Length: 99
Image (tube, rainbow, N blue to C red; front, side):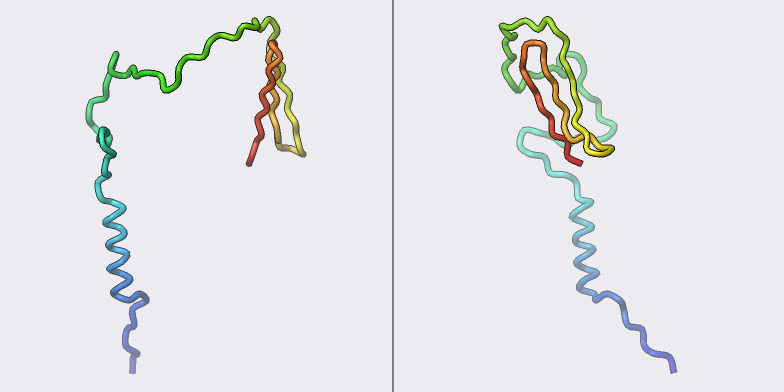
């Protein structure tokens, strides 16, 4: 006598997964002032692409950099842990590398 079929998932779990899939595939909701990008729509060109800079322009440094920057790498085994950039004007920029 064969045993009755017992589903692996309950009907409630299947309904929940269907609601989740529907929420994932629902059209995006744009923030106020923005519209979602739609494939096949024309994109702006020329002056429409220009927008104000998010930060004010930086004033040029009073110290002229006559020397090229010096770049050094700090390694640990085969990986680079830190990159140091020494500008000709003396400014030091250290970049920590996280993998």
